[in-house]
Amino acid sequence: VQLQASGGGLVQAGGSLRLSCAASGFNFNKYIMGWYRQVPGNQRELVASVASSGRTGYADFVKGRFTISRDNAKDTVDLQMTSLTPEDTAVYYCNAKPFAHFTGIWGQGTLVTVSS
Image (cartoon, rainbow, N blue to C red; front, side, top):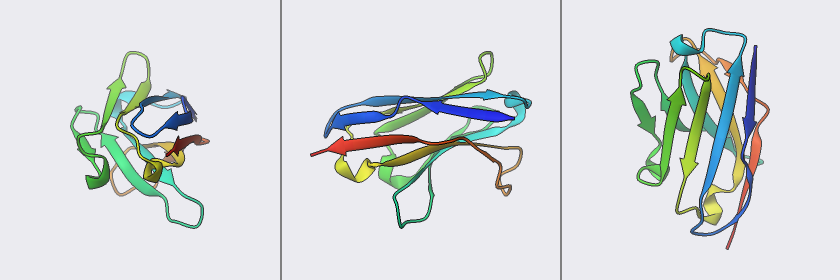
């Protein structure tokens, strides 16, 4: 069971990045996929999620700027991030869970740094 996140990096404020998470070892189609982020010293917080049905949910602080999408044929989930601000700087983690109240599976994280 593995989640491999990629796509992080350094970007200027106002710029865009696309994160991708490749899943393997479980029935991807049936899992809720999500992106979380964590700043050192803070709790990990949900950024966006997409259910097996395709229904999406977003944290208020990214609505209108980030878009989550999944490809069930490729077992991948992406996070398109636009209009980035320094406050978006964090390690971003991919998560997979069979039910909403489960902790689920975590990827290794990818660092996003937004410079002002």
